[in-house]
Length: 275
Image: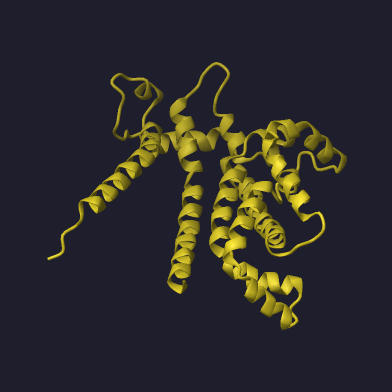
């Protein structure tokens, strides 16, 4: 008869406690979304669901163009994620496996952009979008976010250890071009890193608020986070409706996370088995 070791029990116990702590805010969000604002302010606070969820969700749909903003946000998030995965992985593959003049200096400059606050770039970025005639369109959200320093750094660090130099050399001997080597050798190995970067990029694009608020002057192109901010009135705030809108807004994120995490874990497991 096999006995579970105490260390294993402690590990599982810690994981369960950590999962409960992580999930509790989402549970409380669902509880507040199903109650009224008066219930939210009641003492003692309520920790169980009420009967006003569908009423509150209906108020969200009535007050803002929810589905239109969701569609706009989906377009921006999907396009941004695809472009980031392509450009960041291509740049990271080059930095990690190819030596070229000025490569180290260029990568150091790239890392230096980490210390520049996003808010600091808003004004020059807005001016640039205005000169291109993109202010008010969704392209003003997609194009500036098509590549980023974090993604290149993350993918480079992964590629340096995951992609074998011997395999690259064999591809060169077989006459494979740079782009062919990237597609056939680099991308299959980088899939776990791409899965993580895809989740990270999609969530950031979905939750972005400041830049869409600044650059989307056309009310027909409002993104979800900007639309949800309109639920807060100047003199009256219905927090139950705000919580209901937030609850509905995180559903796509949960779906993306579950799909991306499944691919991430399966690819990591496959790599461990092969190793």
